Length: 122
Image 1 (cartoon, rainbow, N blue to C red):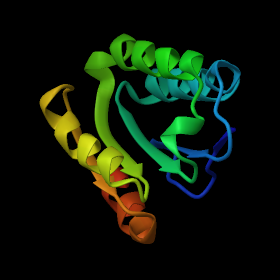
Image 2 (cartoon, rainbow, N blue to C red):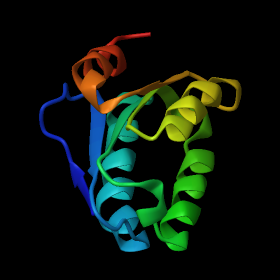
Image 3 (cartoon, helix red, strand yellow):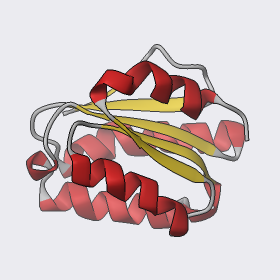
């Protein structure tokens, strides 16, 4: 399930992933919030808090995730991925070479630092 985090500045979209994450979660939660942020700011500062394993994302959710990345390719400003899955955290750091803007991985214990970093203006 995806839910919007409410404790971030208005120029940052924070999404919490728990349990199973489906295509419907992307369609009903992430897509509208991401599009609204892009229309308001032109750039996207995005925090994903993974309190579930990536294996809980359905194939449809993964496909939507890729499509959103491509659709908003030039709009990414800062992407923070917060997880205790080391591979995902390292992938987030490496994402800097794939998309414009900056991406960074954080552990769950570093959530406060992730919020501060993703909220920064670039």
